[in-house]
Image (cartoon, rainbow, N blue to C red):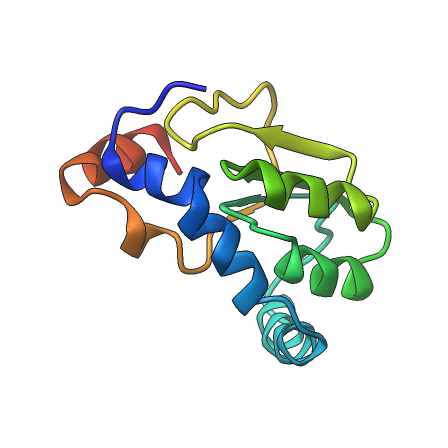
Length: 132
């Protein structure tokens, strides 16, 4: 995988690996369940969901419990996080940087939670123009 920013290298490497260790708990999943339950009250019929920067899938785990029939996708840069996503049974994993992701389809819900603050500010207009 080639990276265009220092931030991508940072998250794909050791810092991203350490983040996995610090941010993997059932408490986070429970908190996400409450958050997404409130958010989903404003939606209808979400059959496909994609998260950019899913890490080990704690948001997707919560959404999967709330919407068990939905197809869940993840875009994740860190290879160790991708391994964890596979362990939880997520089969639709795009192991790449969000700058390189080109959707082959439309999704009912596209989201990111906490990733944009880690993107090089000069690159944000590119992501917004791409619809991320």
